[in-house]
Length: 227
Image (tube, rainbow, N blue to C red; front, side, top):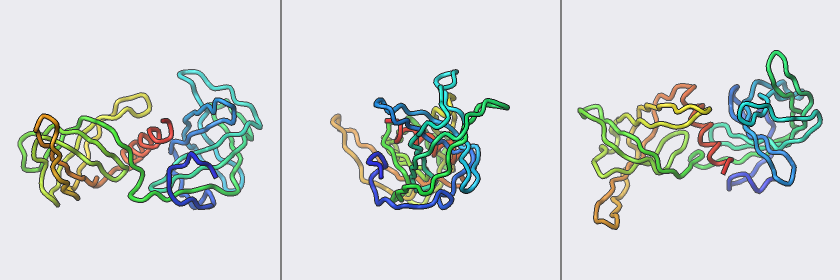
């Protein structure tokens, strides 16, 4: 089992139990001394045959990959992270570049409590349904299911529905996320060194579309696995 998986109880599972999604981002790490890491997307898989992923890239160029080369493959699905070792069965360049990886006999998984979560400092806006204008705030904690937000201004009351908007870099593009959310937690006020107080609110995302959910999960995974 790898020590690089996020902390939590590790289990041995089959790949099919992980419920992979086509288009999910995976990390490939080679076994060289530098442990080079590349990000690819899942194209598909056939049980006990192979796992198809996009060809690793460095900028606009294909990474040189040899048939038989081994990689440590990492990813996550929902609240479960996974990793397994796979060999390159074949390198295909037509009709587009992709790899056939060996189908793993088993994968190491970790169930993460309250989903995967990262710390960050991200400007956002929060707009209540009854408000005329959005409020400027900061996201300090993010998971695929919600965010923890701080602001000098009142953000709403427990159980109130609001709209949270923020921008994230996804696949080399800056994407605007506008997320219907529910205030699930009212935190204590935080007093800063200048005497100003920050209000905290925990927000749960509502009615997430498939593409939005996938893009957000991929961003969080890259932050966790790439650092």
